[in-house]
Figure 1: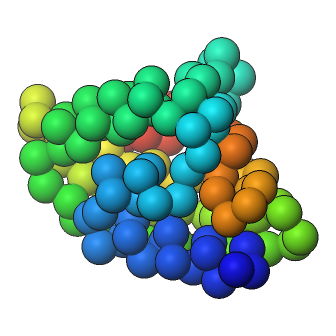
Figure 2: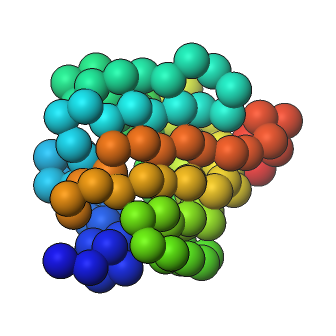
Length: 121
């Protein structure tokens, strides 16, 4: 299946609140996910747990959308905008780009780029 089709499917999962299902469907067992310059989290299980913790920290989603999607061969970039209130009552906004590498229809590398100072809405 073409990467451009798969990335649009992935975006559909995430924007409909199915983030944990997206990990299962679209990410390889050996996936590496990285936040900015932090060390990558390696493996589907470790990233599944990281995403579970994130989902558990969200009390209310105000906005979840892909502003832009670019696909070029095995590489994709998604400009994400997430606006949510966490379980501590803080309103946060992620305006980030996810750069992905795909292999055999699954994401094997994903790095998120964003300005940490911009998280407060």
